[in-house]
Length: 314
Image (tube, rainbow, N blue to C red; front, side, top):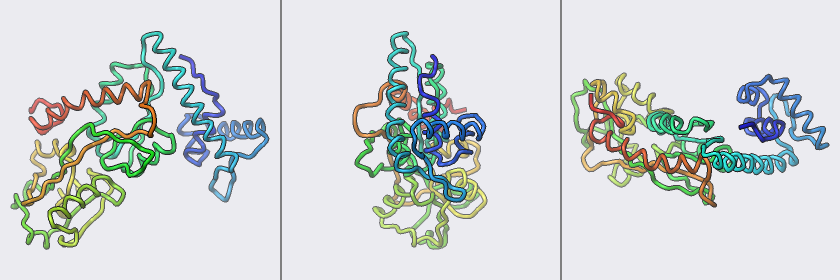
């Protein structure tokens, strides 16, 4: 189906999202001068400045902010129109804009997205990942239609619904002698955790608190920005770290890392689908929501049986 959206508005919306002509050009696969030309033409048509330039940075003007609100509404209306027309033809099509917390984006989403796009090849996917706070902000800004997050949204304009249970496990090198960590052991052990703002970190700190354990009970605490970084640091002998069981399946099977127990401590959480308050998403976002809820049941049961998501336990 042909693109119905006004291209100048699409360029404007992309520049406003990134606050960068260069990044907008990269996102749209056009040259930076072409972006500048489109914005200049739009400003001339409207008779107002849409961006202020201060040094190497650009900012939306008051008029630009007003236009952005309408541009987002128009984008949603165009997507709805495309979807309703496609539904009449019996095909699901249109834009699916997702945001996902890092662990979900790395270890859960690839299988879901692959299967969904195989069934719906006319859907165009865009995915942004980051910690929970970033994904929630993308929802609030209208950049994504649906988020998949690891922690609570903590915003009244965002609704969440659990779709997958997860367990955070404490890992150590496979060569380590310990299989359990006592309260006394913590004092000589470094703890590796995700950064502040991560849903994983909030869940871990809450569980530790309920078990009567504080991060200051450990010899030291190191903040890292991804599960992969934590696994690498643990493998290098820098300490023990918490990661999702989804993130450790491969290393457990290969005998690189192992799970260490702490008496009285179990860290569980729910992965949640997040959306703006209001009507349930329609079109590709609504279909993907239903698809994800149904499909993760099979993935989760495979992980529990074999230690690998949906695997066969080779």
